[in-house]
Image (cartoon, rainbow, N blue to C red):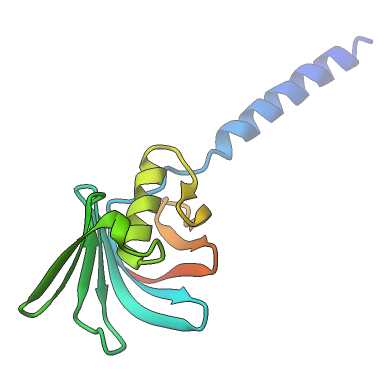
Length: 148
């Protein structure tokens, strides 16, 4: 009995220490990075940016190269060159990259995991930088880190 009590105390101490070390880092949303946005068989390279509660996606490949799509929670804005079009967020498909990323980044900052397309999964590196996001049949995978 004398040996069991110290063993239990040591075990409790080890479990407490392990739970402290295994805390996942806070997910960093305020960043800009290059990524591949993939939906089914279609994909494109882009730059993703989250700033002032607005998601920006700048397309770098396909016929839409140079277009920036942004969502601030109320409207989705499409801009390329002299073209500028604003549409109410609810009138844009929920798989639109800027709308979807706005929902994801807003949910992360508020502790949630749901979007209009369902639950999402975020994979981060040890510092909390987003490496990939998956929701439904859509994935966003970081290909480089620009700035934090």
